[in-house]
Length: 428
Image (cartoon, rainbow, N blue to C red; front, side):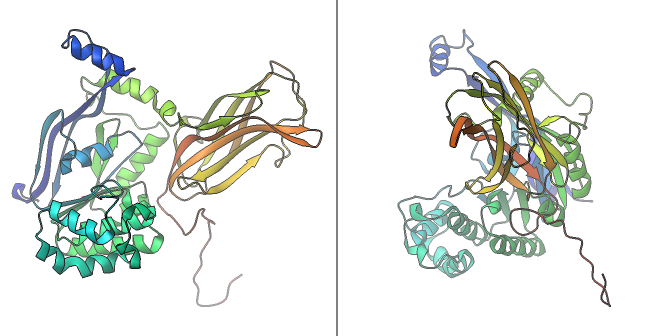
């Protein structure tokens, strides 16, 4: 039984409430009227969250996008203040919350090591003693003498993580940062996690990589729309998370508080929030993509797909002109902008008919999700040929965001779904 004095992080009934304004003018009007006029909507990012994290534990926090995972970490580390509730932290804390947070872009790597170390309360002599270990772990070579504004995202995270773990923290907080580094750097970081566990240090991390959550965590908290749905062993919480993703997890009675209405509004807007308001859009206007979304294998609209399951990408297209055999297309990119995969109705020999003005077509691409766990962007297009001339009727680049949830990530972009056999004699 863990004793109360072994609690490293105590979170009691923490709420985080944001006021959302449709226009900047609404905020000004409300301020001028000294609260007599309400021109905002209330959004509960956290709705009375409580958790105790014990010394020496490795704790994971999982949940869908917008569930409050990063918010609770920022409150624990003091980056954000709670609207209500109390947080107590017992121990020196080091956090890696946002890529390059706390770095001065004009400084070089060495200067930023000293800047970050000073901010964490270390003297120059103490940083001197840790510098070799930091640079060895970061392993970015002579780039350490260049301004960090010239760094790639991978270099950023290597240096930031090297600083975070080499200042001898008692508590380490990590929010998705490891997803930026390559597989070898991630392996080195997770090896450091194991060393920290052996040393009795406390680790709290947010990740969509369920295989890492399963392997390294002692306990897992499952968040959804600002509530804790459950806490327990990794396997049972990962199983519960998968039920959340397909809409088959029911909240226990009485778990939603006064923020219920705001939370329901937010859940209804989740799909819209996964659409990119700054997408690149162009075309001749002879066709318009009216709607686009994803459904899971049960037909439920979603923004997260479990690796290995079937899912469908949908488009609704209206035509304003007579066109011969329009082509419907969709493609996936990773967040770094690399085109991963895609297809269209011509390649699949699925539609070779003409269309007339005012006609609406409902297009669906159904397939098995074989991409690795992570974040992806989907682009859509309606194109065609006028004689030998290729034309774009409507194209939407990086229009929709989707999260792939995986408890087994292999190497590269997609999983070959290999069947591995080890035997004492040759097989077939």
